[in-house]
Image (cartoon, rainbow, N blue to C red; front, side):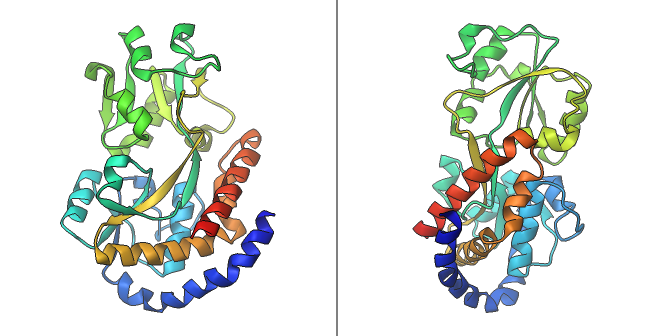
Length: 294
């Protein structure tokens, strides 16, 4: 059903491709920003597959003919530029209500299992009073309050989605170690692998890419209640007429990417075997709905 539905829509998608003739002219002025060193050090600079975010962004820039590297800019500064109408777009961000009020979002460029809450196994297990009937964390802030001598490492500027963002605002600041976004993942992985961070909030795919099936330390893993099982990463552009044109062109490119087998492969190759089919199904169902709606 998925493939039949997409086949019917291919003609409509190819029509959008005709609008790509002006891509070279627009590309000369559009700059892509990211605060993630994985993107800024690899997209258009290294050709090897690396992660879902890197691989899907590379597919996008290839499709629209954008050959410049992604610029490394702190997220706060990128949003300030966009507020002033600068001709930039930010890559691979989860939707957040406050951002949606003032910016334009592309179709999903990547899909991820949502972050899980990890705890060092050397700590006592989280008490049942902090879990729902399915064993999911009810409140991160309450858990950390129950472990007053522990701390969690988080990036300086990052949205985990509205549900988690609101919860993290209640955490004692002394229990949070903030690390600059550009070095967060490398620094965090080093600390976590050595047992120097009591708790972690991170994508399962990120841990799997770093450690595979052989975690260097023992941990417990918890889902988070009232949090979606999957989230998507988007391109964010300024809410201007020029930004709208960029979103239109980016969306047309993303629709073409959806039709390639490489798109799903860019997601499943970074997951353990037991998670591959679930994410594949989520992506196929999401694409079918998005293509029909757009």
